[in-house]
Image 1 (cartoon, rainbow, N blue to C red):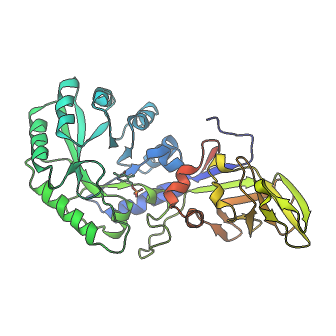
Image 2 (image 1 turned 180 degrees about the vertical axis):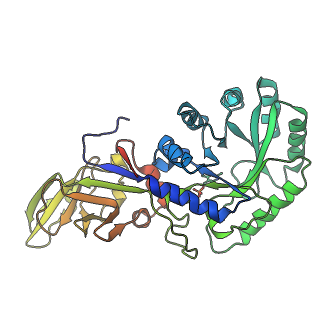
Image 3 (image 1 turned 60 degrees about the vertical axis):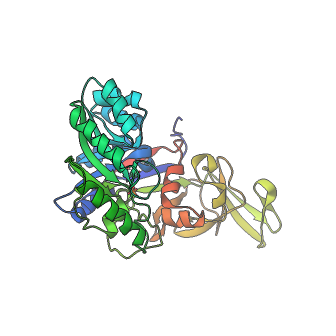
Length: 374
Ligand SMILES: *Cc1c(COP(=O)(O)O)cnc(C)c1O
């Protein structure tokens, strides 16, 4: 989609926040661990290439993405650090990955057998171990035999490079650590029982890096949401005092304003009725096509440091807000970010919309152009 650059609705990405957050987690992870930046889904919609280049300024160790196309986009932008594709890709794509030095995730013995026949140049692989996420990987303990067989293929095939082994936690953001502990134990036992040595042994996402930073035997962190300055648990958990800085803000401007009288209606379905004798209603040029979903009707935005509610239903390209007085056209409206010491966080929006901060970020549409500062 073509970004609408002539409309005053803009995402601003603070590059300094990205660098600072990365360094915060690097320090937390300690010198024995590398930190790969997870830049899947266009870096949680912050812009993968810009984020990658920003992190190169602080000697980022590598990147994780979800698809081969996301990896190729980084390679085409001359990003030369290691890149791991976290999802399973069709085995026919292994030669393409090999050609561009992109590391792949393996979740079955069959995949390796096929790959060993198809690749002509070395391909680096990470074995995924399913210790309880139930998503991808060799399922423990039932797939122990096929995992051993996979290790054998890796030992015998010079073109399959056993670069890593990893698992992923289902509950790392939760206070109750019983299930987490179970997955952890399962992974430790699995790795210890294998005849192969892997360069990278990894299990930590942001939540694990934050709440269980002293994991043994792992030497790589896959840092996602924390890089962007948000907590994996949203507002649910705040027992670690990390000073993370949200990197993304979203602003627009008032493009129309009118004074309506008691009883007048606003928006589709005429669901909002002016209550006071008169109210100022301003129109802001973004809507659900930009990712500002209809279920955010009733939530607040900032105008001149005031919290102003969205009234009526959010439209595809516009929404209406109730403001305390007539503001000039062009007055800034902050939907995510800080204005005059007032803040609306992604977590505020997520709580209102009954979802998680990740989904709010990933909903922001490509129609909104991004500007990079610092
Ligand atoms: C997305 C993802 C991550 C990053 O998770 P955050 O919670 O954003 O840190 C790490 N590992 C895997 C396998 C993932 O899919």
